[in-house]
Image (cartoon, rainbow, N blue to C red; front, side, top):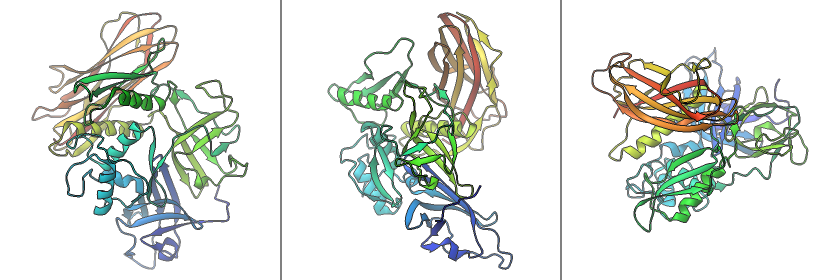
Length: 502
């Protein structure tokens, strides 16, 4: 299937139209978006058999890129990987400038004041944006905290204010809502359904913060009570954060809870083609215009999270293929089930944790590793089982220069015919299993035949002894059931590691 609309796309790179740079033709255009704006784009330029080693000065690293649909800019970013050998060119979205822009003030000092760090980064030229609205002039953390990039400052600002920061297609930094109540797009019945997942379900959020009135650490939560059999989750608002009032901590706990509202997440997204999506007025939607952050309603698909006859979601990311006129839409709250998503999630956790742990300098990432999934369908534990090993991972030799790792274990478990309490213990060994040390624990309560997923709570840093060889680093996961009814079946277990040089 090919795109059938009259208007064709055009790409502008470094101020030049791609069709004038390569009149012999280009193609395979694809672009992606996420909730903070443009994410990634790519296209292919076939080799010119008549001109060898030809290069155009506009197609270089750092060139500004825009995808145009008629007079409208629908994607903006920067050329990241001009690969002339393969003929493939990859650009990253403008919103991602914030990932590598340091949170410094105009004098080069560390700062967590949103307007200050944004404007200073724009002045230094590391952000290709303009700031259209105010994000505040009050610091949101300690100057020497783990908030070391503009993105980390903006993410904390968004959490504190129950909002979303967005870099639009005109490279303007703005504030946008994340709201399901007013869908912009409608999916025709029969186009697909979303499976329900419990990875990100949270019924009550507990936050640890520094009380501005007492100077001591305190606890707040939202909502005020946990439903029977509910899932509780912690959040650290101490590390790198400024002291706050109890009311502010409760408001932030409410913001975290509102992301899922005690509801299940999703196991899959939707692949949609032309004619399956309409606008609010009923016209056929141009799929190229659908982007992350928009609300979309699946007509005729009952909402698994409640009693509504239609399912309305906020789009978390999109991937549009211009050649096939086909879009992949994934909702906010999509479970990290594929290896790439799982590694991205644990990498984000590791980077955040390292930022909080190191104030004297940055640590380079030396590499990644992931275990093969352990399908524990044959592991069944009854009540009061005691500690039973349900997974073990022998890591190959660490990457060159690595001296520590951030390890994360994810587990799926299910108590099919009742309720069961399960405690997990993550252990590690740096000498081939001769000595084991416990590094992380977690307690959950499986209930009502729901699949209990642990995706973030079993994680920790480990420091390596000198002279490690292959298979000396090992991790093992123990599970112990308590009282309850029925038995617990253990499904897929994964372990992921991010290695650091210091």
